Structure formats: C-alpha cells, structure tokens
Image 1 (cartoon, helix red, strand yellow):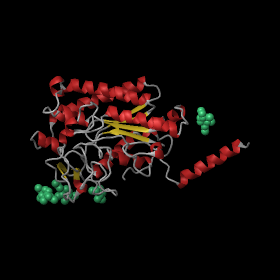
Image 2 (tube, protein in one colour):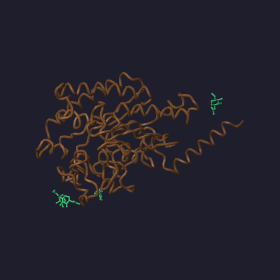
Image 3 (cartoon, protein in one colour):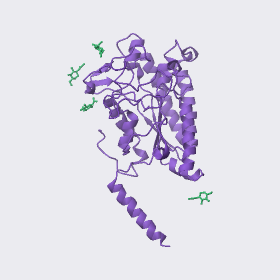
Image 4 (cartoon, protein in one colour):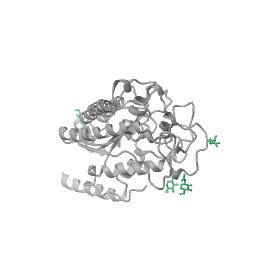
Length: 353
Ligand SMILES: *[C@@H]1O[C@H](CO)[C@@H](O)[C@H](O)[C@H]1NC(C)=O
Ligand SMILES: *[C@@H]1O[C@H](CO)[C@@H](O)[C@H](O)[C@H]1NC(C)=O
Ligand SMILES: *[C@@H]1O[C@H](CO)[C@@H](O)[C@H](O)[C@H]1NC(C)=O
Ligand SMILES: *[C@@H]1O[C@H](CO)[C@@H](O)[C@H](O)[C@H]1NC(C)=O
C-alpha cells in the first residue's frame, strides 16, 4: 500500500511546516499557580482577588483580562518564548481543541493549603487546580484518545508543566494572623515543612496524571512587596516574611531532588523566584497604580491613571510585578527549563521579548 512512501511524504510535510510556521518547542504547556500566572480564572468568581478592570491590562492588547499586571504575566512570557503563537487559555474559558496546547489553571489568592486566601473570597486552590486538570484529561481522552488513556499519556509526557505556588500561603495565611491561625500552630521552619510535604503530594499527583517535565518556582520574597511593608508599617523589606520564604524554598529544592529520584521518568527543575532588582527598575518600593483601600489589599483602585514611567517600576500594584519584571522572570524560568527542550530544537536566543 506504499505506506513507507506515505510516511516519507508525511515526514517531508512535517519538516517543511516546521520551517514555514512557528512550531513551539513543546506541543503543550500546563500552568498551575497564583495571581502571578492567572489569566482570567478568577473573573467569574465571587472574590476580591480580581483584576478584570482598568487600569489592569493598560499595556495588554486585550485590555483588562484578569491578569494581575499592566501587560503580560510570567505565563504569557514563558509561552511566548516556547514559541506558542497565543497565550495558553484559562481553564475558565478553554474549550474544544484549545486544550491540546495546554490549559492555564492559575488563580489569584490560591495556595498550597486550601484555606489560604479565603478571607478574600473565591479562589482555586492547588488541589482544585489539579482536579480541573483531571477534567481536562477526560476531555483529551475523547479528543485524541478515542476513548482510551494510552494516547493521552503519550501526549502529556511531552508537555511542560509549571507550578508556582506558596506566595499566598505566606502573605494570605501565615503572615495574616487576624484571619489565619497557622502562625500560632507552627514555627516558620515547621510551617515550611508542612507546606513542602503537602506540595510534594500534590506534585506526585500531577506525576500520576502523566506530567514528566515540571518546572517548580520558589516562592517570591514577598516581604519586599509594598503591601507587606504597609501591613508591617515599615519602609524596608519585612525580614520575617522573607526569612520564612527562604526556609520554604530551601526545603522545596531538596524535596524536588528527592521526588525526581523516586518518580521514574520525571524531571523536576527548581526555578529561582524573582529578585526584581536591576538598575533599570529603580522604583522598588512603590506601586505604579493607585492602590484601592476597599478591594483586597494592595490591588489597583479601578479606573485611575497609573504612573507613566512603568519601565522603571518593579511593582505594578502593591503585590504584583510590572510586565517588564515578568519578562525578566519569564526569561529566567524559560532558561532554567532548557533541559526540557534544548535537545529537541535549538534554543532561541536572545531571551528578551
Ligand atoms: C476507536 O475505538 C473504536 C472502539 O474501540 C474502534 O472500533 C475504532 O476503530 C477506533 N478508531 C480509531 C480511529 O482508532
Ligand atoms: C529612575 O531612573 C530614571 C531614568 O532612567 C529617572 O528619570 C528617575 O528619576 C529614577 N527614579 C528614581 C526613583 O530613582
Ligand atoms: C493617584 O494618587 C496620587 C498620589 O496620591 C494622586 O496625586 C493622583 O491624583 C491619584 N490619581 C488619581 C487618578 O486619582
Ligand atoms: C518595557 O521595557 C522596554 C525597554 O526598556 C520599554 O521600551 C517599554 O516601554 C517597557 N514597557 C512598559 C510597559 O513599561
């Protein structure tokens, strides 16, 4: 039946198309995270952790989308560097064949712990983001598996997964004793331990669900966020917060090495959190937008003019980085994850977007 000829022909088409169209370095990218990665999942939730109004999105071609940024967020930058033409769609609106390229499950205010962020209202905790991923897998079984799981598993193991959690377990849990009791139950070191234990189980579940290439971001040094300086009434970074984060990141790094040795075929890469400082970002302690006194804590007040010199600011609102900081952080994440794809395609340089 000339199947070899057909195969050669198909190979030719595939080779040709890789020159004529933008082909991403991996077929699919799944995103788990908090507001640094959310691109619209909170829009339909009853929560104060929302950003689907101006001035959010002022530098984004689609305007306010639910990204906690003036423009793109880290997930957008990573997807772009991987060669995807469009951002990975949010779970809330992903449909049909969209899900073949991946899904973004991230949700503002969400944590490793179920209760983190609950004083703000609705949010999709990491456990529930993983449950949403199970739903996606069932859809993939219909879409590409013809009812069976094996082809879906072959597809999923080629995908990149990033997981970036922990920020809200500190700023919207441990360091908010008015609402949460964890700081009276645990020392910072014990808290780092219980968080990493829970996180390890959650990451193992993703492995069970077929993930093999996982980039895990450390928690950010949120003690330097303007909102935390306001909460602690100080002009400098809050050392207690950053100290707790350092312990968490150290335990997480060790846990990932351990997980990789236990889970056959899996690769875990630890991604350094943002440092946010470089000479061109010389405004480090103030948000660019005017912050609301009624919505959440540290989010932009609706419909006000933000600062003009956004390229100089680390912080867009009192918690979240500007687009240009996200470009730096996304490039770091992309470069750190190069073992996932460098052998398949040439690494595209430069990393500036
Ligand atoms: C899909 O599955 C059905 C039932 O198992 C089988 O009859 C059919 O041949 C399969 N189709 C393809 C394209 O593999
Ligand atoms: C930051 O740098 C710009 C020039 O790049 C300068 O105009 C501005 O005054 C500086 N701001 C601060 C707070 O140092
Ligand atoms: C934002 O805050 C600054 C400083 O308080 C103020 O001067 C400015 O008028 C505010 N912008 C708007 C649009 O209210
Ligand atoms: C980001 O940085 C580039 C280069 O400095 C600058 O041209 C651009 O205006 C910045 N974008 C924003 C939104 O600040």
